[in-house]
Image 1 (cartoon, rainbow, N blue to C red):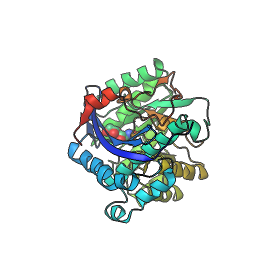
Image 2 (image 1 turned 90 degrees about the horizontal axis):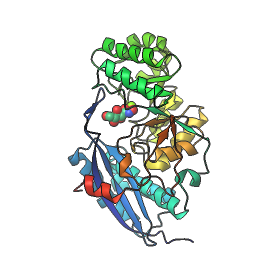
Image 3 (image 1 turned 90 degrees about the vertical axis):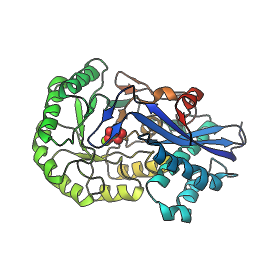
Length: 375
Ligand code: 0YR
Ligand code: MG
């Protein structure tokens, strides 16, 4: 049965979801709520698509994104077929007055939300989960690594105990912990403690969130290598391409990045110059699923592994990571899962493969009612 997927309404939403009653910190950000800012797209045949970007729940900034969805993109979409995703992506991205004010940033986060909602409709119209619509799964099981035990706001012993529990009791093969504080020796001590408790075989990644200088990173690098660190993530400022090229030449630990890169073009520059080894595209910062697939294909051509950053907290990336051959591993942070009709789930360190039609982004009405903010 084919449904009429003509777009009749594009409605923005803003959710502020508490981060399990805690304050979470990395070297750069402090988070008490996760912002789920997005678009609900309705069609003539009754199907609804949901898409969203991820923010740190700062209402004035979130409203810039929701305004862009409502005022700049919605008029371009009404009356169009939601299933023409690629063409509509180009219409939105290439709309001259929008492009004039932003090829990155707020307008691109808004595009991410709308693009995801369109893919959600397309998959629902096909009555398939997104991973199946994209050609089917490339792997039987998708391993997860856990980021939620290693925040910089926790002391070294708490982080070590969290990581012990994650690998021993919850069967994760990998964990990621935050570094990048003003005291590199304290950071190295955290890494040492975690390596001690999880043993030599488990995957241990560290994330600097763009905070260190090149010299700090160079000084810490030999110890990180001795500790068998899988990757160092965002070691220095996000846009410093020459700095990353130099680091990649001078340290032996592989570099991961991507959560702050907005475009295929930015990934091209980092990948083609050898400045990144683990590629971390995020649909919520790129222009959605459409641009994410282009980046993952690029990484594949360079034989680099794709390890998505989960600004969506994994709901949609689990589909993409199952479907794309370059994706090897997926981050897990269980902050907003209860907001969705089909929450992500990890068992024995592996992501469950979603079953419901769509992109995994459908919000429960209870979540909209409980966490919704005025757009
Ligand atoms: C919390 N993941 C990250 C979270 C995340 C941040 O502020 O948003 O740590 O962006 O670096 O790898
Ligand atoms: Mg990171």
